[in-house]
Image (cartoon, rainbow over all chains, first blue to last red; front, side, top):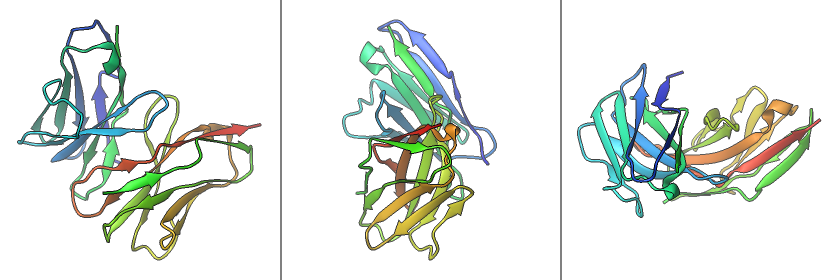
Length: 114
Length: 115
């Protein structure tokens, strides 16, 4: 099946710093990618929809100025957590949709903010 | 809007036995897909099985089968011959088949397989 990668797989940062997470579709082009967040012992919650060449669409309650999304190419979307705080510590997972509308998940990025 | 309900926070099953994980859904879309994912402690989402709303037969993939009852809006996952490696979180999810739309997930069920 298609492969989606995420980098880094885990990151620890100090409060107030910014962290960039990359999501890449390795063997297919994805016009749409999704970013999910998963807190411990909870389900995946959609944060935003990332469309190549246009602004991301954010879900209600997700601050677009805090979670910057850039979908610069058909194979790369980035999520930047700006001025991270401990409450932003979570598991961030991206998914990418192929031309056949199949959805493939990345392996996730575990963010810990000290 | 779509909604997925998984009413079993946790389940235990004896090794080699079968187990059913419940999932009900609600949607106004005429065409939709139902999915089950396994999430081990590593966090990766492992696709298990898919059922389209217009599929006449229940989906099967190896030891996994989906008991799809459209009138009841249920899509239960049946795992046969449970193995210790099946211990994980299991998520039911759905999406309309009308374009680039995200999956909506249930809260998940933690399955523990005991020897």
